[in-house]
Length: 262
Image (cartoon, rainbow, N blue to C red):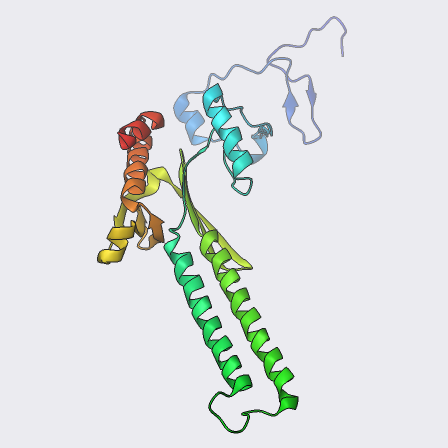
C-alpha cells in the first residue's frame, strides 16, 4: 500500500474475524427509508448491551417523629416485620371473659376429680371400703395426675387464647393466629386492600361486658378475616375505618386518630 495514500472514510480499512468491514467512520446511510425498512438488520449485526441494576436500595426519607414511633414499635414488637416508617397504632387483644371461661371449666373439672377421689378413699356411708388399702396410693397418684393434667390444659388454653392478637399499623393489619402451642400463623392485610371492616355483638352478655367479633373483608377475597372476643369492638372498628380511609385518600393518619377519639 502506498504510504502517501490516505484511506477514504467510505472505504474499509480492515476486516474483523467474521469478514465484516471496519471503517474509520461509519459510512453515511443514504439509503431511502423504504429500502432500509425492507432490509432489516440481521441478527448477527445487532449489538446487545447488558445493564446491571444497583443492588443498593434507594433510601426512604422518613420524618423524625415517624421514625421514633417505628423504633418504639420494633422494640415492643420484635416479632413483627415492620417496613421503614411503619409503626403500631392499635394492639387489639382478646377480652378476659375467655380466660374466665377456661379457668372456670378447669376448676369445675378439678373439683369433680377431687370429689371422686375423696369419695373413693373415704367411702362415707358404706360398711366396706370401695377399694383396698393397698390400692389407695395408686388411686391417689392417678387422681393427682388428672389434676395436674387439668391444670396443664388450662395453662395451654390460656397461652393459645392470649396468643391470638390483631395489630393495626399505619400501613397494614397484622393478625396472629395461634391454634396450638407449636402452631402459629401470621396474616398481613394492606390497608388499601381492605374493602369492609365491621363488628358484631350478639346477646346480653356481650353488650353488657363489652366484647364482640371483628370481620375484615379484602378486595377480591371471598373469605373474611375473623377475630373473636375483641374488647370494645365498636371503638376498635371506628379507629380502623378512619385509618383505612386516611390511607386510601392520602390524609394524615394522626388526623384520623384524633377524629376517632373525639
